[in-house]
Image (tube, rainbow, N blue to C red; front, side):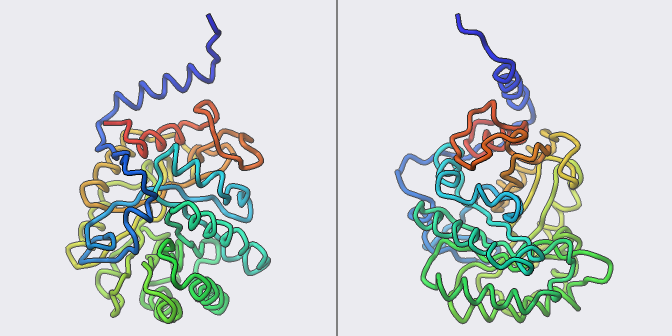
Length: 336
């Protein structure tokens, strides 16, 4: 008899634990041999729903990179293909931290790598202008305009791309009216001049508060969505209700980032709360990207410390953090 490693025992224990939690509506693995983009085509917003090219509501689910300046090694065909084929992911989010990009424009190559891999693999890719420490999207509006002009003109006819124009605006001095909305009104026409792809606009308080957005939405609503981010150990019913309120007021929402942990990225995996969120998002056909693909060993990361240092994909279960085990199971429809 072969000896069973401690890591495998741990993974098996996690599987039993997650299977015994509150049930979640499982995703189906479709055996149509189509890639996500072949299956759904050019996306559009109909009412409050993200829909396929025929106007049928869809829920896209997948994974976000961590900051590409640190973990750009995972922005490659091997990893994204593994997420598509083994994890049943529809999308990859390329998170480009804006401050890092402004300092070093060569980091944009990691976004290009992500797009090229997604196009080849038939995956959707969220191009994420990752506003965070700079708080105000207006700070680097000029650079954002240049960046989105370049991407949207180069890939004007590519249906795979979803444009997330500001990740998490934040801070007491940053409001929807004075900062985020004026920024969006400058950036959206640049993209629209080249393509009609889905555009996701951030909301105040780290994309955690849609109140101001609901009261004063953008005038142009063609293929526009708004982001709401959550971390299961920190956010719950209040954020769910904001999504409900946004839909009631005719606004489409995309959860472009969420985690199984506290908002810090640590604090352990909150599996019960995560599965409650998954049920809510499934019921409301809200698409999502989980944070994140990295090997720094943080609780919200999918890989254990220093696993897959070269970014090759092909991860064994024992390579995964508890969050990775749980999210993979959700994507594969194994928790039901």
